[in-house]
Length: 107
Image 1 (cartoon, rainbow, N blue to C red):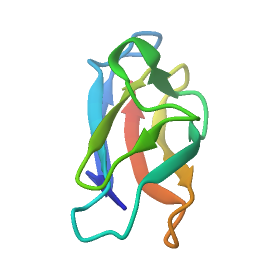
Image 2 (cartoon, rainbow, N blue to C red):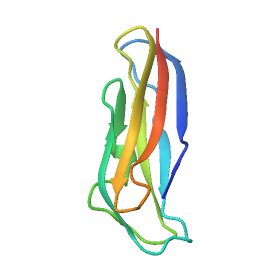
Image 3 (tube, rainbow, N blue to C red):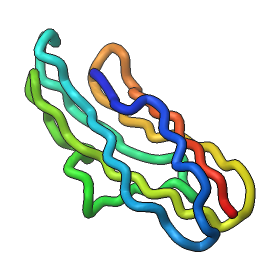
């Protein structure tokens, strides 16, 4: 399985406002042996928020070989300073979970 991008820095953002939604792509490469079953999609929590309206990747989804799904994540800081978090997707692949590192600065 592949999650792109693996790291994302949202940069500075005004407190109590959210950035545009950034889309992460989870792919089941054509070289894999079979379908991938997604068991969990989650962020580490505020200030990094899943945008379910911009996502089609969720628990229970089966990704065929060569298919992909999208996960939307916003950065909405409520405190000043650098903040870090993660986006993690668990599935039945041997390299599960797939994790992206998230960063941003509240100002």
